[in-house]
Structure formats: C-alpha cells, structure tokens
Image (cartoon, rainbow, N blue to C red):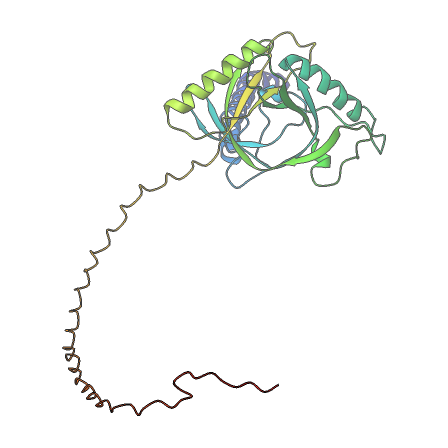
Length: 310
C-alpha cells in the first residue's frame, strides 16, 4: 500500500505542478491586460502642458519645465508654425533694464533677481528657482537704440496666493501679470540677439499672413535652461494676442439739405399820389398912395441962418 501511494503521488505531482504553472500564467496575463485598461479608464489622457478643461489639478508640467515650478497654461490651438496658449494670472518678481543688446539685459537683470531669491529680501528667505526666466522686450526704434527689457522670475506656487517676501533692493518689484493669450514659437540651442530677432520675425510673419491681431510693439522671450545645461535646451518667443480694433464704418454721405425756397420779393407798396402843392394865391400888391403936394417950406426949413445964443 505504501508503495502504491507513493506511486500515485508521483503520478499526480506532475499534473499538479503543471496546473499551478497554468494558474500563475493566467493571473499574470490577466493583470497584464487588465492594468492598462483600468489605468486608461481611471486616468484621462492629458497632453503635457495642457490642463483638462475645467480642472486645474489635471494640468501637467511640460518636459521643458523639468523639476521646477512654471506658470500654468492651456493649449488652445497648434499650427505648423506656432502654438496658442492661454496663461493664468500669476505673480512674478521683476526688474527693468535699459540696454542696447538683449543678452546684456539678460545678464544684468538675472543677477539682480537671483540675489532676491537667494535671501536678499525682507524675510531673508531662500526662494526656489522657477522657469521660465521671462523677458518682456520693448525694442528700440533702430538696431543700435536702447531697448527696455523687463526681466521676471515666476514666483513658486507657495507664494501665488499669499504675499511674497518684499524686495529690499531698489529696482526690484513684485507684479501680477493678468491672464493672457499668447502665440508661441520654440527653438533650441543658445539664445542670441540674432536668433531671437529671427524667431520674432518668423512668428509675426505667420500671424500677419493669417490676419491675426497681436501686440506689434512688444514681445516676450522665455528661457527654460540654466547656463550649465548644454543639451536639449528650450527657448520660446511669445507674442501677446490683442483684440482687433473695430473697423470704423465708412462715413455716410452727409444728407443734402433740401433747397431753401427763395422768398418771393414782396411787392413794393404803391406810393400814394402826392397831391400837388397848393397854388399860391397871389398877394395883391398895394396900390400906390398918391403923393400930395408938399406945403411950402418955412424959413427955418429954407436954411436961414440959425441964431446961436451964447
């Protein structure tokens, strides 16, 4: 009996082992198939850098932000030349630079802001570095003219809803950029004056060709990489969208006033006939009085010598 039992165990054991192997394979296959399906059902697909509509938490940083905080945005549209993004409002620490060359403004402004985040602030707090380093450029009228460049660091999320440490250096200030829509084009390598200008012109030419209204007086440059990163560098040029100015309607022809009727000349009053002057009645001339004969003259009248009494 004992040998028979052992024999039977030896006969059953291979089949039991094979059954366990099949069970493990089936479970592994079920997990392999079911897990991706469950992940796809539970996790909505989100394009990197784009937030799911109506959900801020679903926004995922694009690869070029790496491990730093960066401002949230939503991709509105993508073309072969540019990308349309809608950025949320956010707080930045900024400084203004007036330089002839764009790169010189970058260096001057960067080190001012770097001192601020390194502890040169009212709280002496060290603030994490973020991306991008944003430059708001007002180009000069000529290539050799001075350009006004506002350099900004995005403040980390911990300071987006509270007051950040106040700057203690003159020329550094905290500002909040409003929500805005920008047209973005990207390029790699190291950003130089000529490279930035070329990308700005390419982007503006594409927008003009499509009849899109944008800010023609300024542009943004966004740099995402530290100086020590030599590969996979990412740079962007932004141009802000502005509402097109309404075309004024053509001037309507001024209404021609109806001709004013000329007043008919009033008939001149007929002069009443002037009665002829009365004929003067001739005054009768007095008839001459007949002269009487003079009486004879006396001696006195005849000139006799007069007697004078002494």
